[in-house]
Image 1 (cartoon, helix red, strand yellow):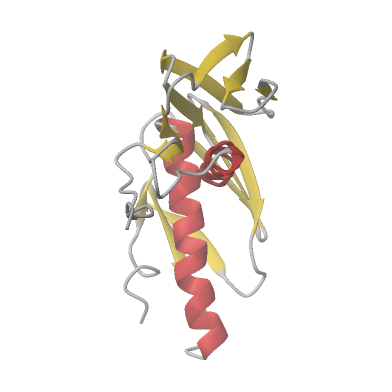
Image 2: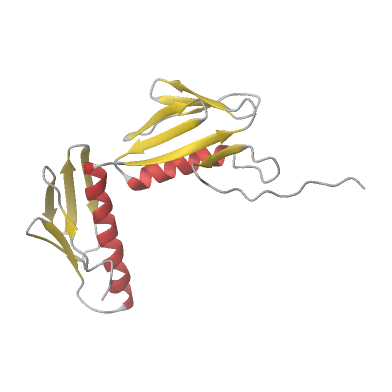
Length: 178
């Protein structure tokens, strides 16, 4: 049996879970998330815990079991605590400026790049070179952080660019004079 799929998901106080067939809605202090899961997966509520059960031990059902449980756990965690990704900007003159809910990045291009915050995502500037992407949907937070990083990936020669906090960038040696 799946080690991840068989683990119960504890539902904290103040969090409401509604199960309607294969659609699950989780409502908590930070917001509300809804998702439709595969019809084969059976989702039940028992003693303030969510349980995911599968009909058989076939390969597709085993993989769906763990996936469904992980997605549900992320929904519960998102509406109670939320998710965040931290980004660092490195390079001379590279910085970020808050423009309302959006951010404007100066990344060495001939023009500043405006990044609009999609619904459910908010940006927080810790310093002009540190950005925090926050939200209740783990997938949206990760996707938005990846889009910002893709604007100017870390350069392997000088290390300039946007990187995740704590990300190691392998440096290459440049050309050597003969």
